[in-house]
Image (tube, rainbow, N blue to C red; front, top):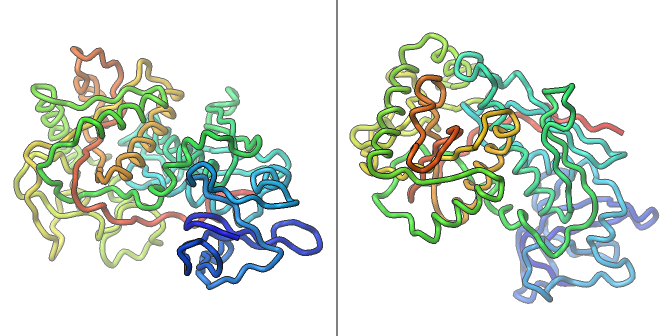
Length: 410
C-alpha cells in the first residue's frame, strides 16, 4: 500500500463491504508512501496515526502523475468501487462543507443543499436568510454567491473521484431551485476541476494592502481562461477605464455609508467585538481589515464609517489590479454562471499565489452598474469586479454548521 498526501483512506466493514470510515491522508511517515499515515477522519475531523489493516484501501486524490495510481487488486479500481455505492453521510457532509467555503456578499451564505441518496443528486436552493433586500433587491448577488458554492461543490465532487452532471435552474416552476449536481460515475482521465481543490479552504477575501507588483501575463491569461470555461468574460481594467471604475466604486461606497437601507444590510451581517449573536455568518470585526490611509484600492468599510478602538490604518496600493467579469445577457442563469466563474477564477488565483477582495459597491446601485463597462472592449452586463494582487491571504470568516444548510433524503 502506497499513498500521497491528499489521498483518501477508506476502511470497509469486514462483513458488508460498505464503508465503515473514511478520511484524508494529511501526513506521511515514509518517503515511499508506505504506512503509517496521519489521517483526518471525515466523521470527527480529528487527525490520528493509522496503520491500515486488510479492510482498508487507498482512493487516490486525482492529482497523481500518470502511472502512480495504486491498483486495488480483486476489488478493482477505487473509482469503480465508488461508483457502485452511495456516499456515506460523512462524505456528503464533507462535500457540502467544501461547497460552503465559497464567498458571498457580506458572507451572507444564501444557500441550502439537499442530497438524495437514491438518485445521488445534490440540489442547491436559495436560502432567503442570506438575502440583502436593500443592497440586492433582485437577488443578483444571491445567485452569484450560490453559483460560487456550486463551483466549490463541483470541485469537491471531482476531488472525491466522481464524474457529475450539473444543471442550473432545472425546474422553471421552482425559481428557488438553482441547480442540481448528479453523480454519474467514476471520474475519467480529465480531472478538471479537481485540480483546484487545494485552494477551496485556503481562499479567503483579503482586505489588506497588496504589493505594487505587476501580475504576469501568463497568470492573467490563466484567469481569463478560467472565467471563459464558465462562459463568462474577464478583462483587466486599465487607463481611463480603470480610473472610471475606481471613481464609480468610490461613489458607491459613499452612498452606502449614508443610505439607511445599505447600512441596515451591513449591520445585519457584520459582527463587532462583544456582539452576542451566533458567530456563524457575516463578517466579524477581526476580518474588517485596516482603514485606508492613502492609496486608490477601492475598499469597503465594514465598520460603516464608525470608529473601532485599536483598528490599524495602512497604505494601500496606488495602482490596483481590477478584474471585471461580464456576460452577454443579464438573467439568473448568467448570474449563476458568473458565480461559478468568480470562484473558479479565485481558486486559480489562490493557486497562483494571488490574494483577492471584492469590489461590489458600484454594482449595488442601478445607475452606477452600467457605466462600469468598457464599451470599447465590447462588454455587456457587468457582473463582478475583483481586486487582485500579491499580499496577505486574508482571514477565515465563519460559516453556518453543515447541519444547518443540508438535508439528506433517502
